[in-house]
Image (cartoon, rainbow, N blue to C red; front, side):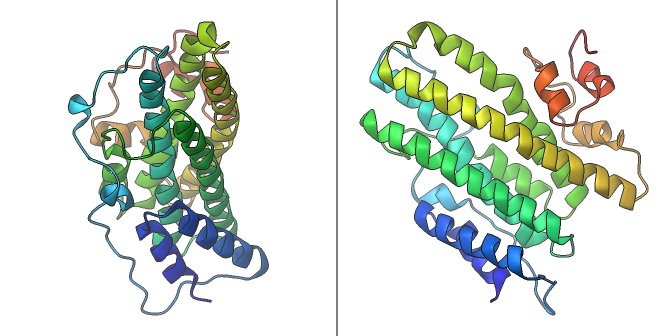
Length: 271
């Protein structure tokens, strides 16, 4: 089995069912076999995201303002935005296995498991989107996560710092705030469904960030670098001083962040 070719197919495909099937095959194979770097294998540098065939990509400033969640369209814009994050995260998790072939087997299993979770999240959200009368691709999206993957292609330490430890960890800050905003509309069946999905996604995203934290620290130790290099990497990518109105202290602690890091990220207290 040429696992890396299957991963390449999965990353490039815009069909969620193909991604699901190939991810399951690769995870099953990794759970039963040792996977080694193949002679002569050179990973592709992807120039466009897999969703380009389905979505209109715009800059973040051009995204439409979120509407009142009391309407189907308003709620659909939120569901669509979260679904897009999950679809993007599938490819990033798969790419983490595909691109960095000399990492330990547990690393490969970890990120294939993350990809399988993200696929499940997307399918849940896509189902709700269809119930609301919309489909993935009906609203414009931005390609921020894909661009972050492109920029960190050549450095796995930076990839682990930027993708799971910055972008996914930021989701831990935002998720509970969205749930809180939706709470007073929870009697609307579709809102109630979304709240339940967001609770599940939040719980599993903590595990994803924790995996990223584990491999970030593994790489720091391997490269004989202090894990404080995290902030140097954020500075390099102009992310260090991004405004964070809601720093989720407990969620970040569960995901591996120290109180020193959490306070530096903007929390007033952490113990």
